Image (tube, rainbow, N blue to C red; front, side):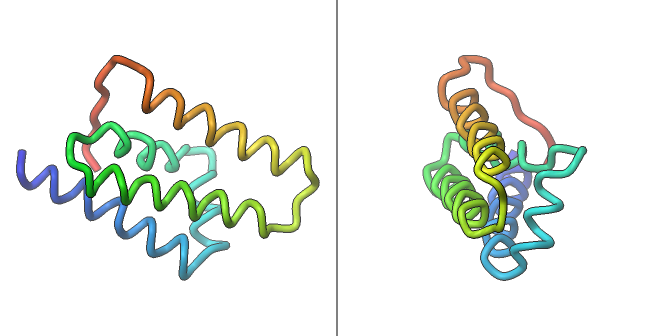
Length: 101
């Protein structure tokens, strides 16, 4: 259980730093067909505050990237709506879902 906890925290920490430093590559990898962004939202359900806080920082970076990208408003709204729905699902869905990070 402890090694899985470390992996989970490490995953969101790395994604957070990638979001800051390698924005275009990270954004395209997060929001591709494999839906890698869901890892961040699953981390919002973690019992440990530092994991949830880091996941929230990742989401903040994603929102920042979307706002600075050269999109039409409807494309921006699509991504922002997706993020909002995933946050809502992660925070208010009573089912506990966990995956191997």
